[in-house]
Image 1 (cartoon, one colour):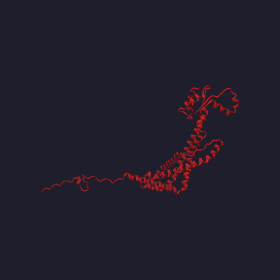
Image 2 (spheres, rainbow, N blue to C red):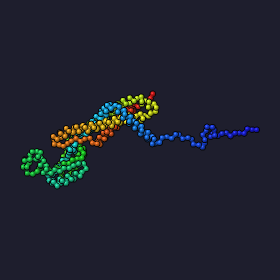
Image 3 (cartoon, helix red, strand yellow):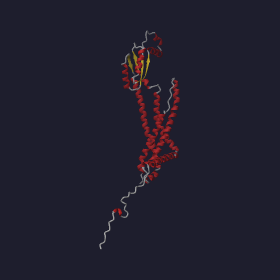
Image 4 (cartoon, helix red, strand yellow):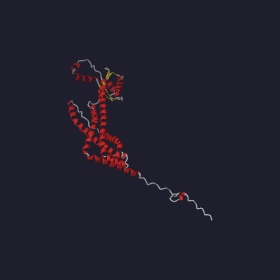
Length: 338
């Protein structure tokens, strides 16, 4: 009697094999976006609190670091504000670049008024003033001291004058405007002191370049100061950072507290710089008001505008953040666990 053949078990029927028609078990559910976002916020909150706590442990050192940064920040901003105030000292720099239009002697006062309105409508003109022949003669009599002699003249020898104040102090634009005005009817001569305009432009450019160069140098100094300060904090926490990286801490996790510390240094420096500028301008304003009063002027220094103050504060925070980032990026590779 021959032995009956037993059916060969299929792979799905073997011991330990997964059922053919069953779905494989899914991996564990990952955390949702809300959980990840909450963890991210908690990590940043902990970094800010830790940075504040460490700065509070060294109040004197933190204060002087912020003060040094504040002095460096306030110098270029203070010079820029002083230049702005100097420009307002004479009323307007554009007044120094006025174009004088001497009209023909036959031009009447009505024609002079019409010419003033025509010039005032031009785009490159900020202001126009009409001086009649009678006004010109009266002013000349008062300034020259020859009033009695001028009265003996048979007729008024002075022409009417139109004073044109341009919007921009630019040599090329002023010369083009002068030629354009010289071609107007009843204009005998258009006079512009281009030498003074060149000097004025050179003075303004010199001041702007000086402030720009000083700003660049002080920004580099600030980056060095904040970088050296953060480097000291890194050295004090070297062992802690090596342990964090040993257990899998990322570079971003290690870098975050130092970035917040740099931003906090910058914020403190920005507040101190704003206060220094406000106090310095107020202290200097007393002497300026007394000096201006001797010349019969009511000129006074303006304070720090709110927009400039907030820009200074934001710039200080960014400089602190960038300086900290550069310092951490330089030393991060050296802190890798061995």
